[in-house]
Each structure stands twice: as structure tokens, then as C-alpha cells.
Image 1: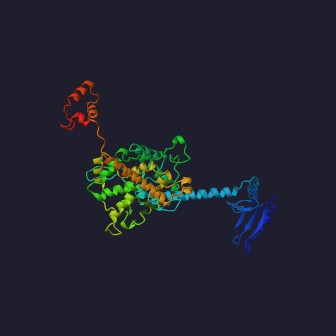
Image 2: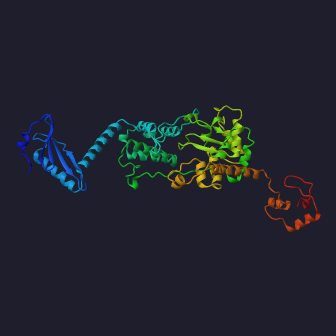
Image 3: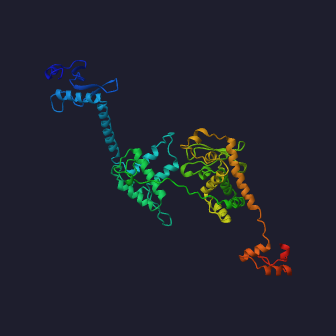
Length: 473
């Protein structure tokens, strides 16, 4: 039973200072100076020695929307019974209410928020969790390009729309699982990589904004049969074929455009990305400048590279020679390789050597050569690849500048050696062997003896010759 009756409680009037009345075990009534009567439940959760207090959502009273004495005592008894069983119901209730408020606020924010607006906000405000850095300019441009319609060239050729353009103006609150599947299916007709990339960006934007799409095929909680499986990216390296490496290196030394040729030779010797050498004005990436080259120490420091870290190039003798040649007589602010478009030079080299390598393929060539000459840890550092979750390489394996410089030098020496092999003429075959090779078989023994016995003159495969077969053999 309550310790006080309704009449006894009503007899207590407001005072200048708030005060409390004990109505039942663990149930108190707080009477404020303004007359507000708040019900407080005091309880201790099993396993804890801390007494907690919970304010019931309704005020005490007999009127509409108020909680009567008997109901208040029953609610207090229920809360205290759960607490004795180890259940903190008030804390759970508060968490539920906060979640509902957050959901309503999120819905209000999403009202009128399209995917295009959400993606633009994402690229501007997103920060990497591990270091707090913003996205690179190139990454931002790639993401925003997914929202744009395909442009039309001067010749009238229509290019494809951005991967997320079909749903760019769709409200996030109206986005459905079928919308996502439809975009993914359409992009698969172009390429699997493009479809995967677009879905990765869409998933990141939805998570960042806290948008919940019912049955989201990109969600973690969606059943596997209904989920879009995003395959991991696969590389497609296209290095210079090993048997043509020497010829390519020799051809690059005689190409008419020396600046462009040295740029490609420098890239092959260092393994750099092209943009790290010549920069990119579209994204504000600076090229290597003359002032960046430390000729005395034989090194160059590349600032804020693709993985958001600085990268130190320890130049081999061959790379240092190229750098020194282009630093001579130049101002510190001048780009080391003042090129606009070097692709014609690369095409000239490829045509002469029968190769098809493109710019990034030179980085792949460097990695392919180095993989057989240096350790995996050294190669990863030379390519400036993040160690990621590799605990051994990230926390235990150390490489000094001397070791890394030796690794770069090993690659350069190997390339030089391949070029030297290419310069050596192949040993000449005996005439008899050449004749057999030309005929595709072995000459009859009788005919061979007849020719040898007569000592007759025989024409070579390239024209008449005054040298006898016996003398040539």
C-alpha cells in the first residue's frame, strides 16, 4: 500500500523551494515551486551498488494525461522488479527515445536531399578516419563525374552518362533497393569494374549520411541472396615484354624528342606514377621541379602522393644522370620535364620496338623487373604502396636509404644489361644450317657431298656471294 493517501498528498502545497515526499517504496513525489508534481522512481540494478533515479513521463494527478497514485505505485514496482533481475529498463527506454528522435531528425534532413546533393556534401566534408585528411582532388573529381550527363564531342559523338546519373536527382528518402539494382545492372553492360566502382561510392555516401534503404542490396544486414556482391578490383598489368625491354631502352635513347624520352626513361627507372612526375593542372598537382631535385644527395621527395604520404626517391646513377641533365641551366621553379603531351614520343618508341606499353605500363615494368631482384618489402616501399594491415612490414621491417638506393640501382643496372645484350649481334649460323632453316628441313646428303666436292660458289640468302660454301663453313 502507498505510504500516503491521495488526500494527504493533496494537502501538501508548493513552497519556495522544491521538496520531495515518499509515496511508496522507491517512489517519490517532487513538488516544485510552480506546483508541478513529478514522480521519481529510485532503484538499484542487480550487480550494481549505485542507486539510480528515473522520472516518469507523466505528472502525478487525477486529471487527463496525469498518473494516479495507484498507477504510479504499480509502475514503480515494475521498474524495481526488473532492476532486481538485472534489467535497467529506464536506460533502455531513454536509448529507444533518443534513437527515435535521431531518426526523425535524420528524416527531416533527408527531406529534399537528393543523391547529387548528398554526394557533393560527402566529397567536401568527408575525412579519412586514420588521419583526418580530406579526399584527394582526383578522387573528388572521379566521384562527382558519376553525377554528370555524358558530354558530346565536337564531332557529335555522345559519351556515356556518369554511373550514378540516372538516380542523381532521386530523393534519398525515396531511394529503393530496385533503383540500386537497376543502376548496377545497367553499368554491368559497360564493365564490371565501372559497376563496382559506382556501387562502392553509392554505398559510402549512404553510410556517411546514415540513410537506411529497406532491403538495400549493398547493406551488411541484407540476406546474401539479395545482396549485390562487389568483386575486389583486379589489376591488369601491361609491362614491356621482357624480351623487348633492351630494345625499348635503346630506342628511347635515340628518339628525336629528348625531353619526352627522358621523362619516360626516368619513369621506368624510378617506378613513379606519371602524375607524380609531370603533375596535373586539372587537380592542382604540382610536377617535379628543378628545385625539388637534390643532386648532391641523389634524391627527390614527392609531396602528398596518392596515398597521402610523402615519398622519397633515391635515384640510381642512371636516373640521377637524367635529372642532372635537365637541371642544368634551369630555374628552381621550372618543371624538371617541361612536356605537354609525350604520347607521340611513346608511340614512336613502341613502333620501333614492336611494343604497346603505355605510361602506367612503365611503372608495371619497373615492378616486374624489381620483383625478381629485391625483397617484397623493398619493392612495396619503392612503389610507395601503403602497408595497410601488414603488421610485419608496417611495424617490424625497416629499410635504410642505403638498402633502398641499392634496390633502385639493381633495377637500373638490369635494364642497362638488357640493352647491352640487345646491342650485341647474334652469332652467325653456318651456311649449311641457314640453308636448312630456309628450306624448312635437312638437305639430302648426296647433294651436300656433290656441292662440297665441286667447291662451287653458292649464292647467299641475301644475294650473290663470291665466297665458297666450304670457306664460309
